[in-house]
Image (tube, helix red, strand yellow):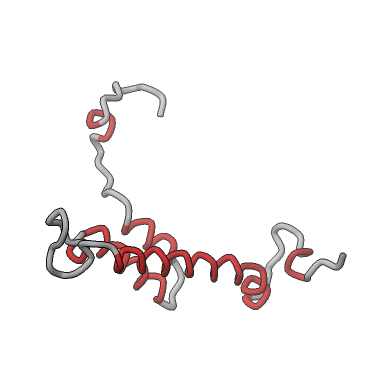
Length: 110
């Protein structure tokens, strides 16, 4: 069985953008389709409309849905560092008192 040039590249070697795209296109496409399907399920579910329905909660105004929208916008930016910006969007800000907050005594191993 013949290996593609991208698959045969040794670890640490530089690949062209086209090789990276060849290698990851189907996986990326699958993730985009999965995201689209999840958003469609939210849209079709009760309570998705702007006016609250069902249990009185509207997904339209849910801050998590807004975070997802912001994440998609970050993905569309044509500049490096998208993964870091998306990670930071979904991360809590650093709290220097995190050990106390989680009940971890000072000096305990991390």
